[in-house]
Length: 431
Image 1 (cartoon, one colour):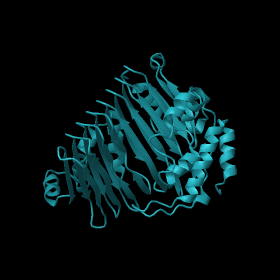
Image 2 (tube, helix red, strand yellow):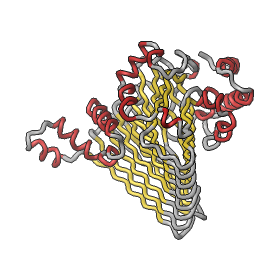
Image 3 (cartoon, one colour):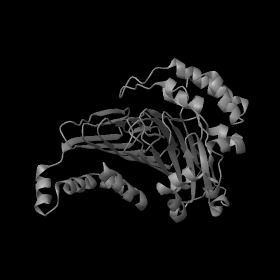
Image 4 (cartoon, helix red, strand yellow):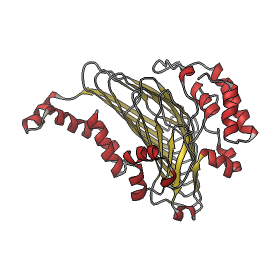
């Protein structure tokens, strides 16, 4: 399907959007046409004329009985319905281009928490929406933020009021189920002063013979003394280009944590970022990427220190097998005014065979002499000595490899909710 201004006007009209949003979409489309692909990372060969840019499959509801059987069964088989009942405070489930099921527990609603699809937030909270939309991730930043600006649909909008600490996570799940599908959700999260949020995101797609595209945008605002943890387990099928821009800004004494797992996709380019604006703010990013045959996972993190006494920590774990390529690409910048700041970067990679590759592309900048930046990177293969020792105890070579890999990613697994750690174990064993 050829993307045109008429198609964008049609989408905006179907959503019954205000005129300023249509203007924004058209401006973003013009920028998309103007910009080239990024001049770094893997080569992108996307046939934009083959993609389906918008597909609505049903109205949003908070009652599973009102969701079509095939969609409900998909989410049930993924474990989403059980997770909602057991330990989640609210869920937002997107199928293709729109959220099809959404629910927030009544006790959380009574605290003034807002958790909606981003489309609904535009309608129900227009002033709050406009205050934070397109602030951290500008539509003109790159070709795919521009494409998201033109076509965004679905995603999550969350506002946590002051002095509110959730005792259970909120979760969104994004599913691509059609061939050549383009998914362009937009997520905005605001954690107000002295509040805390844990948010979990899952992503999957069916395997198809032609490529699909996922180009999401995430903007997170962590206010004074607030804390946000954003956990992602991405298991896209091997025909998906996963090109995502995620960014947070942290005020005084605030804390941001990215926990980022990348198992699937054909190509991933994703670098969750933190702007440490406030004094004494801090940020952590811990990630794993497992690249297999015909996969390139180009991932990492970015930390921009602006406030005094700020701290950041990046831990990146990469695994590559069967000719896959897993790269770390990141940046740490400590500005002139960010005195007495401290940043740590640690990148570890295991190659499981001689066909696989891994590269590290760090960019580290320190612009004052009272701050410290530490960087460490290692690349290794599975030790024959360790394998021999485990096999001497009666463990098969396959199981011994699994044990070594699980030990390698232990730091990441410790940061996951139990149910997600179990699911990660399953995904890795199946790969």
